[in-house]
Image (cartoon, rainbow, N blue to C red; front, side, top):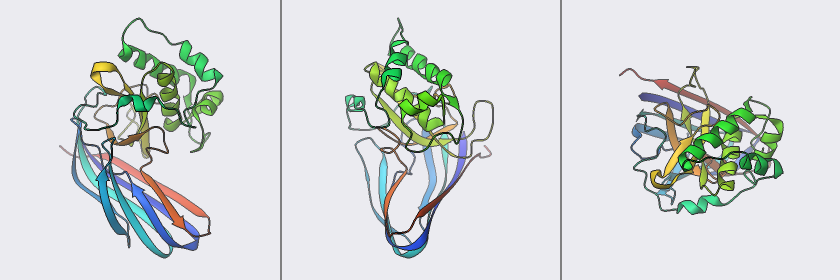
Length: 269
């Protein structure tokens, strides 16, 4: 599948900022399931800094915007050619050992309810089957409902609510996997459409679980499937904060506003 992606993030400030420094994880991953073409990252009036590939295999680049400025825009355009690898992350080069992803964060720390839920999921088969069952369980206990959770909502809080968005599904699945001693991590990216064909006009997130000889396998608990050709992978981390596509610091005293627009369209073959 050939996908055209347009992603614009606009930061507005009620008082001009003096300076803005950002770290961007917005370049698609390199692996057998996707190939990137004419990818462009722009920050109008911004200064591109050095870039590097981190231990998880993600491309990170720095940008600086010198003020005074009352608005900052991060704009991404390009297209990616994808194919279905049944969720398996083949050909992805990274140096971090999978066991590093057994560490909990604030967002994925288990409470009593998550521990009980993890104990309720068992299998007589292998870790791959367990991963599928854990993902299906999260899909059942957390309904997809935008607007009920926030960026700071934890897996425990989402489970208590019984509702959330893809970030909450990913955090909860990561927690259950780690409780079963399976390394798990958060993945940020894009999704062309849901399984019912409905257009998906926002950034997306899912989890990857390390399942022995297969390595990392993606599980999208929000949609009850493994990533296929509709998905574009950007990067990973211990949780949403660690894997954030955009991280930065604005120097100023004013309040910040945020507006995000994402379009993922299939191109003519």
